[in-house]
Length: 202
Image (cartoon, rainbow, N blue to C red):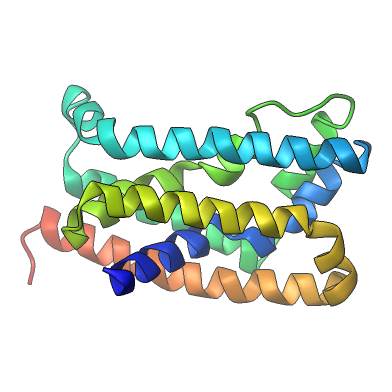
């Protein structure tokens, strides 16, 4: 059980990418007082946990209602994850996170874009649903994994200022690219699995 929980938490942390999101959080909350910043991060992390856990239980029903197949979800999740990974490895000049941060600079972010889609984004939702199915683990294991991964993610975001000073801009960029490479591999594997199932390939 401990091994299954650890692997689930590790997978979720790769998708949540707390180190890669630190520059975005610093930019988004740069005008918010430090005391208030802690409250916002904890609140948005709690919202993200609720969304992820809810999708874990109702995701199958939503797929059935929308007549979406498992391969379609896996391929779509792989594509989304691949695009996110590419942006991490090759960040564009006008990064989407920076644009969102600029749009939210005058007010306090609520749910969007911190809880959704930064934490509980499409890739995280797809990963929770697909991985929980494939692993065959009880749902309470994944609920615990979501809570633990989100708590670790929140801890990283709360220490975003400290990490930024420790690694510097170049170090943070290098870490984000490393996470992007790992996510690229995961995305390709999801695509291969989805295509194999969809076209009945071995």
